[in-house]
Image 1 (cartoon, rainbow, N blue to C red):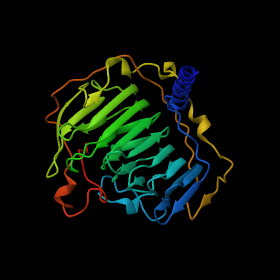
Image 2 (spheres, one colour):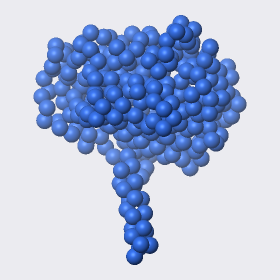
Image 3 (tube, helix red, strand yellow):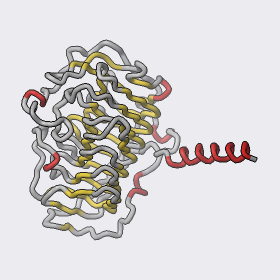
Image 4 (spheres, rainbow, N blue to C red):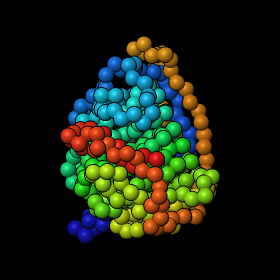
Length: 337
């Protein structure tokens, strides 16, 4: 009886894991149900679940200034450890998007309509901290979408990126802080630099699976690594499978294939949970945003080369101008392309 119960429990756990895994997005952008503007960053408290009901949220007093260095004060949301932000579209009037300054946050079905400096910054925490990004997407990012400055692990599942430089960047100037990232079931259209960038000398580990990419470029970098430098610019060393630094195989990557053939591909038409909210603008907003883009693509080949791209341009290190500031409380400028 004990053995049978154990087998049942194991099977149930497996079924639960399968059921909760995100589907590969199909490239459909969600439609906003209205616009809300904040004069200051809105704080999502520990234990709170903030459901934006697919409204667009942005700042009333902040405009994007490209890659100009700023901080959490120019974000739309600050999510405390243990907080959850879900069903939100981040508008263009902001600089830092969403901040998780003490790690251990949950980001679910959050969309960045026009990324400014960074979309999501994850800082602080401990080696056991875990932040999750499930569903959602980002587009028009000149640099990285998810910036990981703290310790611990970031899990990214079912995310969509369009016209972005990097989906995930482990901070290249934050010092010897080993970071881990898991990326699965993602679809990226026109990546400018790489899907993931990690640091070889600081013990980073990236695990990737079911990666779908649509690109017209000659080479698609799935996972690349740099030499982290707390006192200057990180230098790029190579890219491609290289366990434990970059853990994936050719079968994990699909380039310029049909994303509709991916297992469990889903449309974002189901993301408008709570769409009964008003479509009128709130707090002096200029109006609601409606989007309806669709992209398709993905593939069957992997292109990765090691010990290349040493001449690749890297960003100026923020530590040269902010050496007296804590890495966990101020943004670091790391490997911008």
